[in-house]
Image 1 (spheres, rainbow, N blue to C red):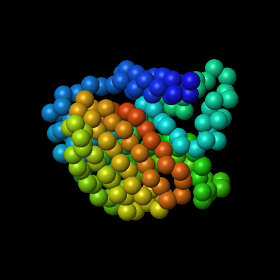
Image 2: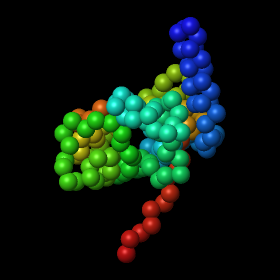
Image 3: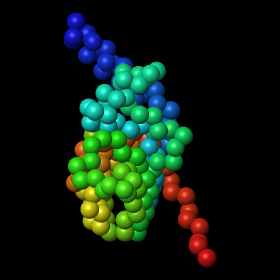
Length: 180
C-alpha cells in the first residue's frame, strides 16, 4: 500500500511541475540569455526543507498536504547582470545565527558586486548556472538550473541557514533607467 501511495505522490508532483504556467520561451532565446549572463529569475514557488515549517504549513486551515509555498503575484527575483547581482527572495526555515531586532536579514535581500558565474551544460539541454557570492557573509552559492523552455529551478546554499529551493522562470532583464 505504501508503494502505491509513493507512486501516486511522485506522479502528482510531476503533474504539478509539468502543468505550471510559465513564460514558455524559444530554446535559442533561452540559450542566448544564459550565455549573455544577463537575465532575471522570477520565483513562483518556494520549497523549504525545514520540517517545522512543513508541519506548521500542514496544520493551517485549508492548506494542502504539499510543502510548496505559492509566490506567484509577488516580485521575488534574482537579477543577474554583468556587474551586479540583486537577490530578493523570501526565506522559510531555520536560521542558525539570527540577528535580533533586524528583520531585514530574515530573507535573502542583497545586492552584490563581487561574484563569479560558472555556466555548464547539463543533460537534455539543461543549463546550470552557479553563482559564487564573495561579498555576502550569509550566502555561499546560488545554483540556477534552466530548462530549454525557460523554466528554472534555483537552490541557495547558505552559511547560517538551512537550504531552500525555488521554482520559476527566467526572462530578459529590463533596461535600468539612468538615475539623475
